Length: 180
Image 1 (cartoon, rainbow, N blue to C red):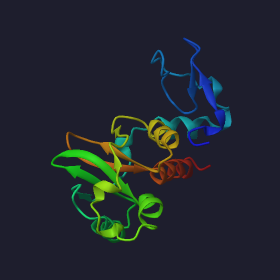
Image 2 (image 1 turned 120 degrees about the horizontal axis):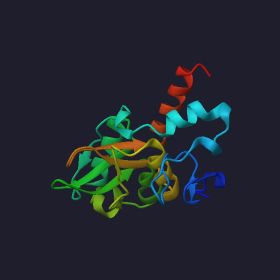
Image 3 (image 1 turned 90 degrees about the horizontal axis):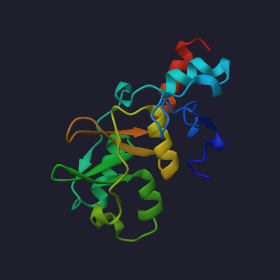
């Protein structure tokens, strides 16, 4: 099941609350979670990879379109940018996201869909992460929501997109750096 993470949890030593493995603070009392539940052999990579802030990831600025743009325009941007997502912005407000998964699940089987407004096929009001949140939080939100792309708010009206691949890439790079 999406978001299950194999039922791996860490229990807060202060309040006893169950928290997903890899989260650095208790969701209930906000106290730091101790590494008691992390096996010693995996501790370095687990702590370093999941406590890192999203702002430290190398993320590109995704293309953006207005809600009145056509699906065809969005698909063209996906292909040209070799990216998996287009942000849908109304004025300066993020109103949706359109991904390659939307092309496969919502657009491909519908004749004439390419000429329809993107607003008909985008995900409305997507979950957003902040650049001061951790990799673990972003991956948890993606798994819980069943999606692979999540907009990340940087400053004000600027957005990037975090993907499951970005999080995995960061973990692998740290693992290699540690010589594991």
